[in-house]
Image (cartoon, rainbow, N blue to C red):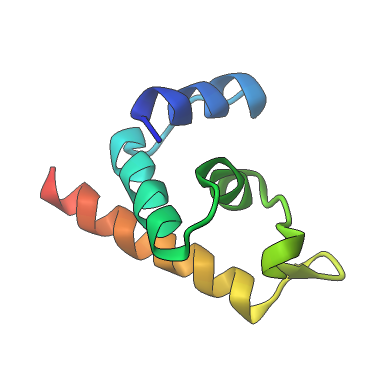
Length: 86
């Protein structure tokens, strides 16, 4: 995942201006994707759009499951590592 892809998704799909470090976010999503061997784009949608990932059981009745919260928290941990390094 690249910084440009994250910025584009936020600008054009969510119709918002990015407020966070898109490079750090892209790196965090790539890292979690490699850890989990799962699609980067779907993980980005989970984080930014709260879109459920049925195969990972991230939501139940519209709310995050423990697994969903765990994935999001791991992405956030990676994000803060990259953000503080820059």
